[in-house]
Image (cartoon, rainbow, N blue to C red; front, side, top):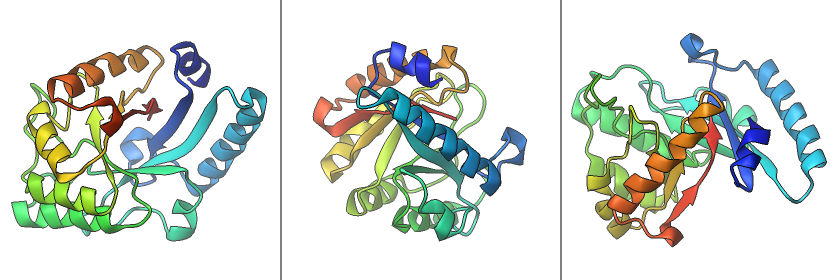
Length: 208
């Protein structure tokens, strides 16, 4: 994946496998994290200054809004994408508070696919999007523009509100294979449709 990302012209590759709560997706144990970081360090030495692998994780947000590793494990990562992957039917206030607590966590770098929608599959969960965006701006947590064609989340209609509130945006392909790295195209297209200027967005080739 790192080699393919480099061939796509990117300067860095953010690895963001699922965390331990995501048993359905092969979420990483602490032992697997240690091994993955060892491999990333070896490859970074080989790449030198031309390309860098960033060590990340897509950490599940449990119903209580925590992240699903202890602080001493979270401290090891370069970035953390905090995302909801279950308990979609919580009421609007509870779901919003869940996200707000995750955003307040100093380890959180990005909020992933904020509304949880999957196009033509399921609606998003109920949240106060504006309140969540305000918290992201306050705590310097980037808002993901998930470029996967099933997600395209956060949707472009909210991009101007995010910009007005002071949010940074992070365009990620949500790639689970080399072929899916090309999803970046759709994320960039949607960011442009939403009016996101280059200085307010980052293209992070995260793969999970």
